[in-house]
Amino acid sequence: MGEAFGLHTFGNDAALMEIIDVANVACGFHSGDPATMDATVALARQHGVGVGAHPGLPDLVGFGRREMKLTPDEVESIIRYQVGALTGFLTKHDVPLSHIKPHGSLYGMLARDEALMLGAVRVARDYGVPVFGIAGTAHQSVAEREGVAFVGELYVDLDYNSDGGLIILRQPHATDPAAAAERARRAVAEGTILANDGTVLPMTFGSICVHSDTPNAVEVAQAVRAAIAA
Image 1 (cartoon, rainbow, N blue to C red):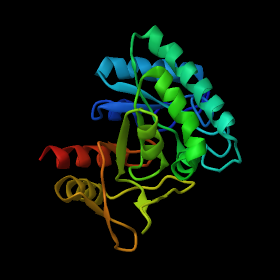
Image 2: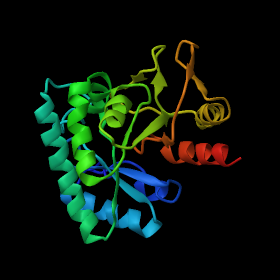
Image 3: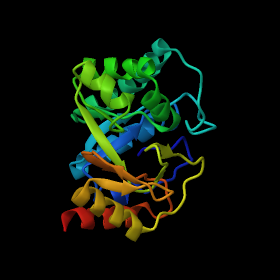
Image 4: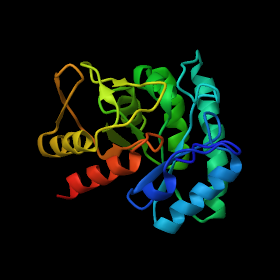
């Protein structure tokens, strides 16, 4: 959430705040300016929603969805910088930092590279918060090795490949709410999901992610909420 910049806004933040438990708030590098961070944290507090940092690659034009060649120290620095920016507004509104969840291509890079992931984990350890990520990847292995709490995520509006990796598109697309609800229901009941080629994948998770910038994000979130409450 909070993925806006200046006069340019999009997403369904206000409606989604009435459905969700925690929000991943953009911290400025892929999107999100100071005024937007301020307003988003205030909205989250109004609805009793937890706020996690959603740091991305320094790429406003590509919305953080284009990979970069970075060193582990650079990864740590860009995450630490962005989390620090968000915590300024959390302090203003007396809201604790809930967690850290990297955004977009940074998320994927850290899932595959333990050396890069260590930078993110160091920041989370300093703040005493969990890392959100994909179970069975470097997200989990590095966090657990370094004594940082890890929360696995299930995505209902992105496809998975047969290896369990996310298929991240440059442009957001509408998701069938019924299909999203069925994925959540199956994951809760059976601990599995289906990859895009029909492969059955084991799924371990403690959080379900819905992107705010998809055309029908509110309907998807409502359907998923109803499915897991049933």
